[in-house]
Image 1 (tube, helix red, strand yellow):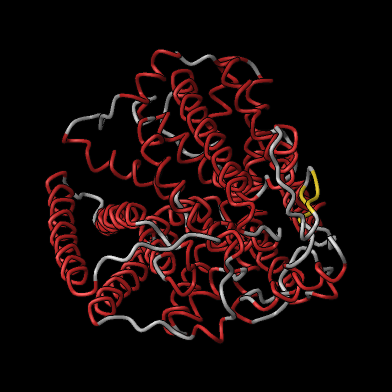
Image 2: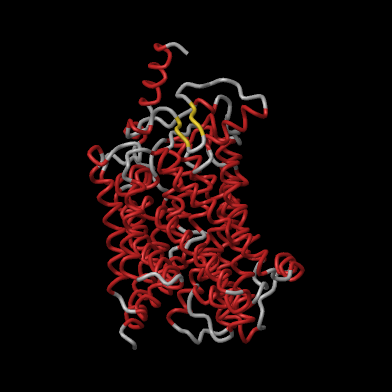
Length: 550
């Protein structure tokens, strides 16, 4: 490619919605580099593999980061309390994970604009502020749980608390502040490889393969109707820790920061698929290990370190130490991802430089947010009592469950926006599936809110909530179907032209303006937003009361 052609491509890319010029250039992945303007056909297996190795990263990191300290606690409790009987929930989450994360990687590659900025630009400051406030609150609390995981792991390994927390915080900060995206990704992917430690641990603990397989293919809610409320909380915990808002913000911004364009979409989808396989294997392994630990430790489940203690009783100190190292690895990569999610979103909101390609001097605000939220979380863990830390861990799961529908609603609205995605807009099947997922998330959020406020919630009350949500969803879906049918009769159904989409990019944001919601959409968003605000306040009050010992 000639210099003139390359300069032309750079100008065309900048003409799009891309905001930070650090997001334009060579793709510098952990395992390879793709030059800007490299349009060579990749027909051979070797060429395709080299391209995949250069692209791999965003999907793998976001999924492995999802199996963080909170996930270890949730999966460990599921295994401790119910053995392998809830493994089937992981398979149900696979399509949800893929569809959600595929939509954000599409948004990132096509628009070149972060999730928070897109929401502000298309929906306005009012709705944008709500989405970002939700993210910041939840991310700050989630990061605290990552450091709680670090203290649990290092304490089990016999390391002092204060130096361990300080050292971990310094490592997490230093890894991102070198000014080299490629160096950070190599560190992050090394931690992803470290997460595979759960596989040899599972082989050594050898939970029953037959029982594990049965748990995957047999959907049951153990304990009968008398235990339904308790089981549903665990199920919602699994959903909440597996489908989290920070994942959407992180992956979209990371895809942009890695400079991935629509031309490499199929490779990024393969990266996401690989990440989902790793996260499901890791989650299943942790549930199985929780079951093994419960059989040899007894008592009630308190935290993820209980799994390590149970494994030590079963197979010796080495097995317990290996699990503690896996927990430490998971907590650190989770801290990486959650902190970056926050810093990227703040960069979007404040319109400042926000790229790992930049050094500290070129992106002071970005790195200040990144380091600041880490310092906040580390400080909370160092000064808070064990009781407060335990309540915070529960609180993160509760708030994540309550806020589940919010991020998915905004995501769907962006992905059906033809002005934003053009030929990359959602297909009808994806839109219908995502709408169904949102309906389920709303129902689970209502159940969780009710259970937090009333710990004696009955199976009948839960069934009534789920049935009511189902009826509302069916009625709403029917109304949308009739509306679409009438619109089709008037204007004729026009298929989306997806030709030439590899070269299509979102126009500059100033050319798009704000979308005009219909009256029905505004009412629906207002109702959802009001519920989420009230539910969040009620849950927060409940958690503060628990911290005070009431």
